[in-house]
Amino acid sequence: MQQSHACPAPNAGTTTRDNHRSALKLGARLRGQILALVAVILALTVPTALAQPLSFTITGSGNLLVAHSHPHAGVCAGDGQYIATERTPASDFEVVSHPVGETILRDFNTSKGHPNEKRVMEADTTYLITSLYHWNRPDPQDSKLQAESFAWAVQTQLPSWGWFSTRAPSDGGELAQKMLSHAMKYAGPYQLEPKVERQPDGSVAVTNVGVQAASGAWVPGLQGKLSLHGPAQFQNQQTTLEITSATAPVQLPIHYNAYGEISVEITFTGLPANSIDILQSPAYQDLISVQPANTEISSKAGLKLLPPNLTVAFTTKVESERLRVDEPAVDNIFLQADNWPETIDGDPVELQLRAELYGPFSTPVDESEEVPQDAPLAASRMVTVTGPGTYQVRATAEETGHLLDGALPTWEPGYYSWVVSALQYDQNTRGEGGYADFLLMPDVMDRFGIKEESFQVVTTDLPPVPPQGGDSPTPPETTPPQGGDSPTPPETTPPPEQTPPGESEDGSTTKVTAPPPTEGKELARTGVSDLYLPALAIALAGAALKLFASAYRLR
Image (cartoon, rainbow, N blue to C red; front, top):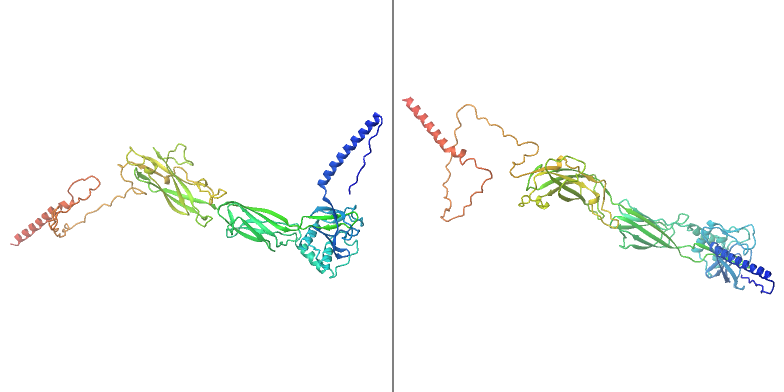
């Protein structure tokens, strides 16, 4: 209620008196401004209060009643005064709102009787009271038993219970006890703690989706909305999903199409109010009331999807230690790995190997940990590998642009050396997070100038390279047979008569193609085959001479 203050009218007097009056007026104004400021500060720090003229429709009986005045449904708060009804003039009530989780103190200016009880309800009780109102909302059409049971359930939780005589509902409190049990099971404070987790099979899901009450029970019937952020979708191929909470947490599979950060935002609506109203009046009973509510609770969760690790090792060896200027340079890579990860789509990941060829050098290179800064780069190749095994990398002078004398594409003579490396820097990246399909752990790189990776390019007039592992073997010496006559040459059949070159058997002309010339220089135009007939003739003559001598001795 507001009070009016009449200010005295000014009248004549001495100057001193006027000055004194002016000073009093100034002081009064300053006090008024200070009090107004204090009132504003208090208004911002004390529970919300709003004066309303209210009258109520009553359900129930005696002290076990519910006073209805939309949106309020009041239950006696332990005040010793009568209740305002529709039969009484509307009275001003202050509606003071208190947040749940805080103790509500009595206002003795409006609550009469029981001076030793200073509290309307304890902090923990506020969650139970809002739960009672939410799950068992009173209605003016409720039966007498329903109204009495609800009022009895509320009042039994107040410190003032027992200060006044209250009979039990007509069913002995059975319905009230059911209301209390349900309210206790699903009372706050509430927790929403979702997780984004990898599953044992490698998939990803949003788990622990639901709202948990203080009792540990999962609150059913709440309407939830989920929003995904990052390279992922729900099974409906959307980034949003609406669900209804159940009596157990829900697990929602998600499909991710790249590595990176995945986060989810979840909001559930349909929880009890987060404040309690105390309807206060100096002339009537103070009332407890909780307005209808559809309170929200929200939370976030996330997971940084890192690609699997890949650890590799390799050895390398050139195909040949000496090349001619026009031959390709081939390097063999023998790759090992204990396991080989798969892409998000289930395919073997592709590892990019870098093979760099350095040269030419005038002398064989010395082995070192790193490539010298002034080493000329002759060729660079990227080799894609999809698992352990043997791989080859090839480079030709033509591909690398090296020309000798401006003619055919050839290598420059000298010494060369391959360096092979597997670097995370060279791997392809994809997805919002910029991650590759795997993380190379650690980078692997050849030493420079190792013997197995080095070769020499020589000019074409040098002899061919002997097989690796030593020089060409020396053919074994042959020993002629010991003793006895020389072996008789085998009988020979004269070759058939040949058709003269340029003529066919039927006398037609054919094109004769000379055999291709053989490489290398000719030493002579005669050979062992050219000496065969003269030797045969001499042998036959010798045999005839022996026969003639034998016949002469027989005579």
